[in-house]
Length: 109
Image (cartoon, rainbow, N blue to C red):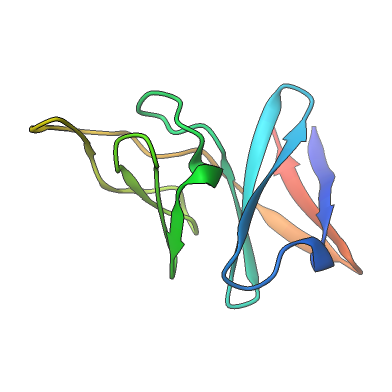
């Protein structure tokens, strides 16, 4: 599919993350110190809405069961926890990002 415009640079400030819908995919954009990163907004554990979670430095925490992911790569940093049971969680899907002028572009498959 190539690079697709997702948002404009002034829509997401450093330390923020927001979700944007593109056809059947919802992208989470995170701005970490001015660098932009994109993940599939759906947590790979049970489909939690990552945009409703917390962004701390380069880590997003899923609000549903507490799984943590590195927004730079989508790598799972810690599993989910349901009651007293810890569960392994796979990596989140990440996408390359580039900025052209004021446009934020994400490369989609």
